[in-house]
Image 1 (tube, rainbow, N blue to C red):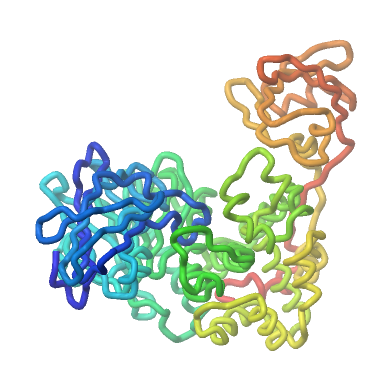
Image 2 (image 1 turned 90 degrees about the vertical axis):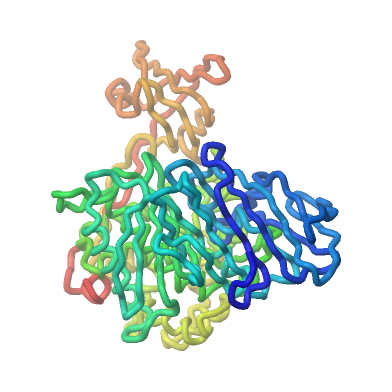
Length: 585
């Protein structure tokens, strides 16, 4: 395909075989170099793991003027074509698409989806030129539509046709959704927004979801800009509903989301179900990223290196602070009440408190190690690291409540001042520190050192009390008391994680063990679920745990801890909390 307005790098994407889950891609480079290098990204921005997308490419060939061109593979994801300069180069290949997540590509007879990082080879030396993407439908795709954040050039009513991108970065930052999906539109601050839902059941209440997403967008645009327009000309939400799934990935003017069909609102129901609150929080989170990480972003991400890891210590800010605001802005939008918000905050606090790794790694270190720890979780992850999402959200909470207690400013003011200071672009921790000082009236050097770069407990209880929220200490569930995370299925208890320093670790329990039962008071009891433990243990604190490991039966001496606590937040002074929690604050 040639002739797209100003484009010199062109991609044609079509279905090679729906049932084999294969896309066919034809890449045309108008003016290749003599030794034109091509490569496919090994990761996708926003998801910090090397995923080796090139493993799904096949049948890659190169031609000029209809003749084959030598194409040598240089490494796992790079090729080099020996070209005649000035003569258009055609590269054709197939891409296997069977990853039903937000990160890669998917194709079957009902739906197609892809990120450019999974399908679009990068033409080295051509990255900053205009790129075009042509989407082609065949007879097997009758009734399919297209949704994408790319700018349309020559596009039909269903959305198939040619789109333009200013450069390679924009091309691969605009995922494409195809299929027979539900779709609706609305405007916020004069900017068109589109909500696309694939896989919706018959009971789906699209009008309610649309209205609630509209309120989220209004609240977040007002948060960042008051009466000004947002920094994009259009926005697309792409929600894929599946039987079991959850996640999202932010893009410059769109987001790809996946959730359970059980979590969307249903016709005739007005209650705010827990799953629906979680879905709205996800939508709020990814939309907030439009400002906080896609534009205001780590200085290390000023230019992406698609060939390897891109390290930063700032994910506590970009993911953690976004995680703080996602639920808080649901409250300010009036979509949830104050008790619901405090329950969500309570859950985050308890998650962090039940993670021994918070005493091992700071959130800054955890950010840097995301590539090898957070995105490569195993049975020891909670002992070795802490989530920069959850603890980062609590760091944001601490800064916000500390600023409010001192009466000079709020974290809202800091975020907006950062947007102005960094010109909606790259920033470093020094920028955050400088804005804290300017807006908050003093240096927050000690807080940054302790909360971001330290591993001591955060001063949550005192800060919450100053905002009218009391912390009640209540007995924890048995698996938390013992230092365990388990799965219960078919009358069997299997240990997923043994937490550092807990009673289970001291007894010698290990991840993967099946906890069969206990011996206590001269009797043996089969354990089919953790709730049975106090039933059979009674008042005894010392017992023998019977576990199976590698088909060996082990008898382990276990001492039940006297007590363990969990937090419960209670709003005691609504008037004091009002400036922080009020709708439309």
